Image (cartoon, rainbow, N blue to C red; front, side):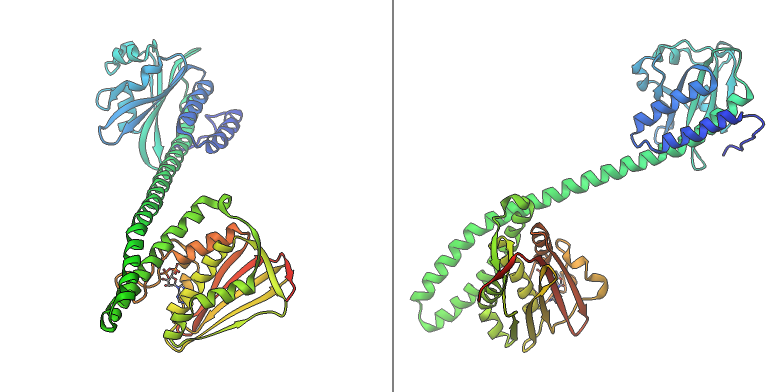
Length: 415
Ligand code: ADP
C-alpha cells in the first residue's frame, strides 16, 4: 500500500482526499462510485480525463469500467490485455507509471485510443488495491500543463487506495443485495408452492372425509373401527393442510382482518372445548383461570382462534399423557395477557426465539415424534403482531413451557 510522504502532497490536497474518502464511503452504487473517482482523479492531477480499468480475475484482462465524459460511452467494451500494455504493466509491477508521450512507448496500443475515441498523449497510471491484491488501474490522461509530477503520482496513488476499498465495499454490498433478492424470490416461491399445494390437497381430502364418514355410518362394528382409523388419519392430514392454509392470512396482511371486539375468556373456553376429545384421550388436566371481569380486545375472531388453537395444540402435543396445562387470562396495565403453560418437554433457552421462525422445529424432522410442519408459532406470532400484540415463550427444559400473548385491552364486558 502507498506510503504517504507529506512532503510530496500539499496539505490542501490531503484535506481534499480526506473529504473524497468520506464521499466515496457514502456511495454504494458501483457506477456512481466509479464516476466520482475518475472525476476526482482528473481534478486532483490537473488532467484532461481519467479512466478506471478493472481486472477480470477469470480472463486476466483489464476492462474499462469508467472514463471521463470526453470518451466514447462504448469504451466499456474495450479490453486491454495484461501483457505488453501500459495499464497491464502498472497492474503486474504494482507500481505507478508515468508515460510522458505514449506515441514513443512500444506498449501503447493505438487501437485502444480508437476504441475509446479519445486522443491520449500522456498517462499517469497507478494500481488499485483491494487490501493488498491489485484489482485494477486508475489512470489520469493528458496533463493540462507540463508533465505529471511526483505529487500527482502520490495523490493519485492515495486516491486509488481509497477507491479500491470503496469499490470493494460497494461490490460486497451489491453481492449482498443480490443474495438478499434471491432469498426473497425463493421465499416467495416457497410461499406460492405452499398456497398452491394446500389448495390442491384440500379438495380431494374433503372427498375422502365425506365418503369415509358416509361409509362409517353404514358399516358394521368391525368395519366401523377400521374406518375410524382412516377418519382419524384424514383429520390429522386436514389439520396439517389447515396450517399451510393459515399462512394466507399472514401473507395477505392486515387488509384481510375483520376486526371486532373479542371476549377473550369466551374464546379460550371455545378453544378448550374444541380440543376436548384429544385432552380426554391423553388424560391431561386442563385448567382455565379467568379474571372476574370479561376482557375484550379488538381482533379478528377467526384469526385469534387460530393463534390460541395453535398454542393449546402445542401444549397438548408436547406434554405427556396425564400432564397439566393451564390457561390464564389477566389484566396487565393497558393490556390483556394470556398465558398457556404446560408441564411438557420444554424448549432449550437458545431456541426460544427460533421456534417462531417458519418451519423451525426443535426436534430434527427425521427423528420427530410429533406431527406438524413447524408453521404454527410463526403464524401465531405474525397474526398476533398484525393485531398489535406480542407473543413470546419461556421454558425450563424437562419441566415445561409457557407461552405469553399480550394484546391491547379494549375494555370489559359485563358478566
Ligand atoms: P409444529 O408444532 O407444527 O412443529 P410450531 O411452529 O407450532 O410447529 O412449533 C415449532 C416448534 O416449537 C415445535 O416443533 C416444537 O419443537 C417447539 N414447541 C412449540 N410449542 C412447544 C411446547 N409447548 N413445548 C415444547 N416445545 C414446543
